[in-house]
Length: 172
Image (cartoon, rainbow, N blue to C red):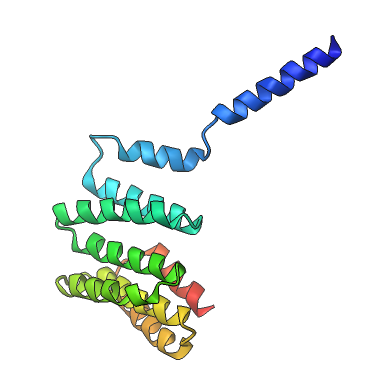
């Protein structure tokens, strides 16, 4: 009798864990993206979180897929900052995959989209990608010049905490 109780308890625990969501945070973000009444600005922010989550978990295919959707939304809403960020995100993914030959087009695209706006945050993001790229190639002196340029651009704005964190992390 006691053995059956533990067997049933073990089966219930196993069943509960197999049905439970794999990652509640990621699932909630993805469900949020499916909300039709979500404003575009908020949807862009959620996409950024999803992309960063998958990238940090080294699920680069998923991160790239969501980044493509993010770029499409950014283009349809004509948001140059988001377009710049999308190119930066994809460039970071390519660096992490060590596909260095595929990074330069994203650096160029980010620079072009940032140059079309007076938004200093977009320009700071455009300077961040070459910093990340050169840091990945162990060219630290070049990387520091891009980091300092990006930080000086951020000083002239209200700031972007995520970008500031990334820049200071590279300096560390």
